[in-house]
Length: 400
Ligand code: PMP
Image (cartoon, rainbow, N blue to C red; front, side, top):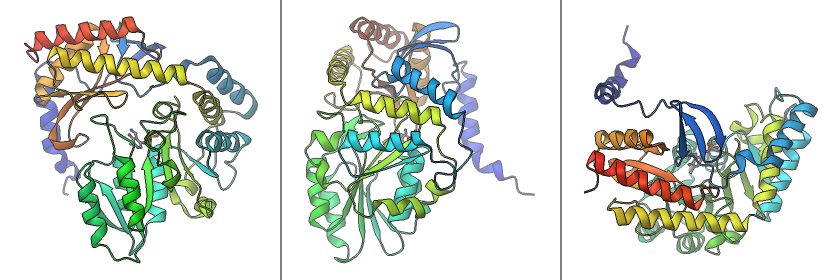
């Protein structure tokens, strides 16, 4: 018998070597109690959360929680079925209506996760003989959507407008083409030049899909994302998003103005062949989306937090993923995994949780400490966070 686990031996060894240094396992942290969107008890200690995707702090919103409780009482704990059979409840329809209203678009489809939304839309839309042109740093769910379909997949250099044009130019004029971009790239927190890329894609006859997972609720006048902020939302064919970040629950969606959009409900396998979201989840999502529409004050405060943390970390001497703050994600670049894990643990001991990210999730083999801010982080917390980074950075030799 060939042991099918042999292929993981290198990874097992890397992990064992790291843990043998005595560091806490950064990929096995347990939140013992969650006190608010910005504070939890981890390892018995009160910890500021700076590594969640709870950008708008909706997880503890009283209206959101009440909507979930009401739905549990009135509709039960689960649907036990697919959206196309017994799994569409009034709550799923209300959630799709909330999305149409939020984005001011004609069509909305709710999937069970954002991962499934990418899988379901990409694999179904782009088939044999079609072309997908995508940023090389695209999220795993986008790549998996490509792998599940049969289209020719052509990556281009991250955020490189000329590279995108070069690829588009070479393709047969009458072939089906889908350009896939993200609003915010989640590893470094940088934003795509959608104002240049979307018109370019259109010039070459391509449809455009933008994943706005990390920008929904926060970026843009109405929180519709980078497409809105850069004035190209009307030219984008499909926006993919998730409920697992600003919305504060779980689920995924696609919105579109395409007149034939609804047919995807019958042909998209990751929509058809999985159970729909529980009624409590769609109720929390719909309530949260409705409130996000009117969350300008929160958006403003989140920008202030992002600017202050970015400026403060830069001043301390940390190397950051972007020159200027572009989103709610601020990535601190670590020299290697060992130093990254040591710094991660030093921060945890200070009472701060950040995300440790490593290849293959990160670009260019980088080890990153990813900080993601919340609109509910107070000014005082941001000050505390900077103090923690300073002490941990000096203790581990990451800064002088
Ligand atoms: N797209 C992007 C860009 C993401 O970062 C993520 C999740 N991190 C997803 C899609 C998938 O979202 P979900 O958690 O809802 O599966």
